[in-house]
Length: 293
Ligand SMILES: *[C@@H]1O[C@H](CO)[C@@H](O)[C@H](O)[C@H]1NC(C)=O
Image (cartoon, rainbow, N blue to C red; front, side, top):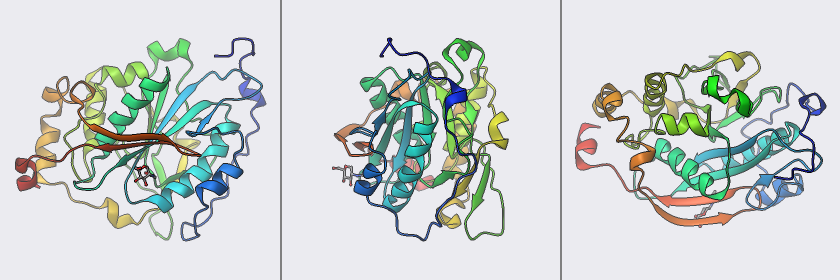
């Protein structure tokens, strides 16, 4: 920390309010172009305000596989917002190598673990690759350190508009974009590692959060609305027998399944121009899981 600087004043942030969002069909900018329009972002996708000391040290964790166009749209949209909000932050893209079912929740845990090795972030934003914020008045940070004791994890993406869709909003229990302080995430033991393929891992996180005495804070819903850039059918998986079973037993497993049992093989960790690329092999589901899917 540069202790010679004064803390940033929220009133001095040059926010724009409602933002323009390019239609998802538009070709995304290259990483090079994103870098050139964000010259103060340093390799690894890191930034700290040059003239004041940020009140927040934020790690943005984005799980990824096969969605590179979405990732470029998101990074090009998000970097300017985070800078205007005067955050000290790093963007981590946690990339799952091929060979097994996608495990969104485990990639979030990996992002938390790897970011924590790099820096003492006090706030973690778990962020799907296909959600774009519609107004920069939605704060991408945790409550101030002094308030952590009393604060709850936040669910930001309650209101989601999909492009080309008649349904204006889409509600998740706890998916999309959620925010935890380090203490909160450690206390719930992170996400469950057992959900392979899409669905229910966010409901599981919701149960874990309640179990540890937190409520889920949705008070920012007014300021925080999102555009979804993926196709809706990605999201419409029915819940399988296995997911239902896992969810039912969520609370009995909580202390043994999560950050405390996280095992993965780090393939590489590199500093891209506008994000830190954490590439991992997280293994795969057990035969029993596949059978019950
Ligand atoms: C990250 O690194 C891996 C391994 O080098 C690479 O395959 C992948 O394309 C990189 N980029 C993203 C967005 O994951």
